[in-house]
Length: 270
Image (cartoon, rainbow, N blue to C red; front, side, top):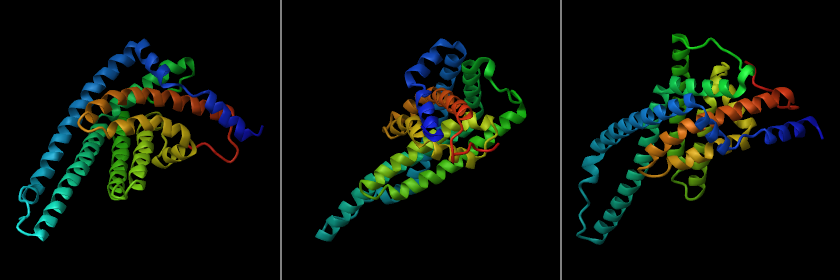
């Protein structure tokens, strides 16, 4: 067995199931209490942003969608059918887009709080092996905010791409789901990797190198985000959980990589 296969086997064996992460949170009062606070904060921020965004968009498009084309002729009925189709399609796309913009804003503003949760989870899990950084400071908070904003801006680019390719039948919808899956994984990996001073390029490299693990980290949040109406509340509920879940798996994978270097697959340089 070569080194690369040994590395892959080690990472596979070291994977922490979601059920283990859930049990870990409930066993640690600090993680449970902080997660509950973040659920409420994320719901409030996302809902506020969603209402403001949809209200603004609806006011801009109100003249077009409140005046239906006349149906006095065959051509009029054709225009009416197109108007109805575009109205419902616009409502669907605008709501999905508004949710992601609102959630990304909430994500950016609450980044220091989630970074604290991630750090606490890694510290409690690793015990004496925890690698300390510069601790809780104004500089650290500003750094976490900056990283959150960078990931949020990157998410806006992803959302715009998804908006364009989403109109392609079947292939477009599958591509959008995959985009959101890997972007969700990036949001969670951002916390433990930022503590290690990784750049955005290094984080994206980690996602590419660990495509299977990243897919497993991002698929549930991506699916939840596409549920109408309930997505705001469900996403807020799963985000602290997957912050801890991703942190534990990121830590485990990185420790495995340190023990068994992957040939031709170097670790990101710090």
